[in-house]
Amino acid sequence: MKLGENAKPQGSIIIALSFILALVLTIMPLPELIEPFRPAWVPMVLIYWSMALPNRIGVALGWLVGLFLDVATGALLGQNALALALLAFLTLQLHQRIRVYPLGQQALSVLMLIALYQILVVWVRGIIGHPPESWLYWMQSLTSMLFWPVVFVVLRGVRRQYKVN
Image 1 (tube, rainbow, N blue to C red):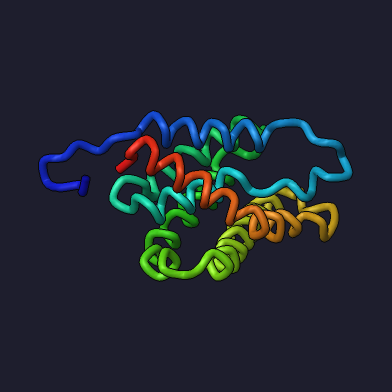
Image 2: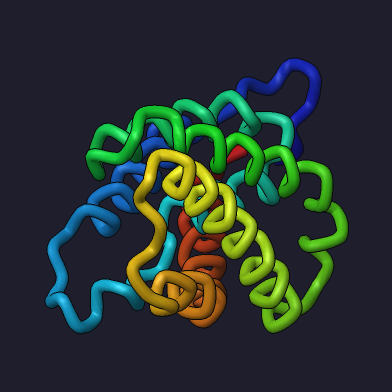
């Protein structure tokens, strides 16, 4: 079924649940040794939904999810909101190109988008006097790239199974 003029968008609950799961995976405690390798779950979910449903998912949702992420992680209110809003904007601008790439090239695009997200977050943290403690801060971009094919396939399967449009 194609989304026509009279068709109502479906699957808002599925989209919300995917963001909630990403938030849970983000705040779930991990051993200190592997904490720097945690993928950027929330930005990856935002990238996926912005590519899959560019007419429904956008900058405002990125901002809102970023505020929830700020509150959930105890970050400076607005740092993730700013970074995720910009991430959503860039994904919306590039979604037609990224969608046609094979998964490997999509993963490289996700690497660049997540790295930009991290640059914005580290910039804000640097302004308030909390720069990253080590180079391991940047591992999140690499692990996000490695997990992207799994995130993409799982969310695409969920979108198709529940007819999210």
